[in-house]
Length: 314
Image (cartoon, rainbow, N blue to C red; front, side):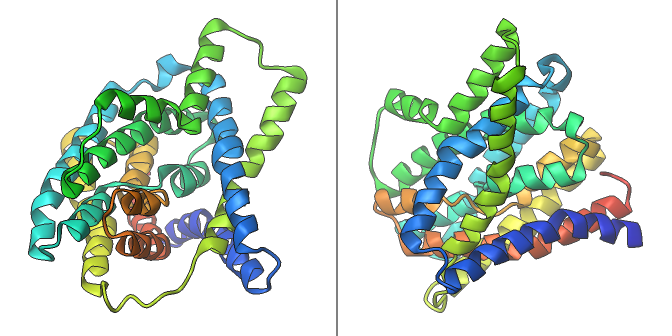
């Protein structure tokens, strides 16, 4: 039990401290809101994409192409969406809130908190599958989010336009570039490797500090019921059901189980809030869901890691 607690502490506490540092820097007025937003752009357009590209370059794709696991993950996400579309009707009749809640129940910030947890729990040479899942999960999330939000907003857009926008995502582009470099056999050495690796190493720490700085404590009284429903469903109910199926029916464990855990029980993607607002849905509720799941998941993920480690599943 003690060893399991140590593993969980080592995985979660550094993330908590970096997020806390970001919030402290904002409170001490060492980082302004405008500078945080500018840093956020650098993180998501340069630093994290470089980290993902490096992982894809150094990964043997033949060894990490676990088709069974990838299919299971995709089916699990689709099942969560279908169940959520029925479940949210019990909480609210407002389509503007329903769409935001459905998005909150399935869409995870896999890159920002998922990858750091995978790095903490897995050996560096086993991170290939975790990085590969970015190129699968992120566009899948984005594509489904557009369809779901359009459905609840009664809007429509061409599938081709949606597809092009997804390809423009720097993280997707970086993964594709990394795969191309790997397949073509372009040497990853010298100043090219040194530059990319040093910039990539900055991605996660800077991203977590910025996340902490962007947190804003607001009143949740108006949407407390909706937020609580999403937090419990997203971080506890869905992970419990799907992880049980993965373990007992499909014998998924070790690195794939860690990846599945952070995909299921991670916080809601930060981009979901402005996206919902842009589509005419409840942007305030979306922001509150992002904030609540980002804080609560640090506790729930800690518990999940202790449980899975105690049973020697990860």
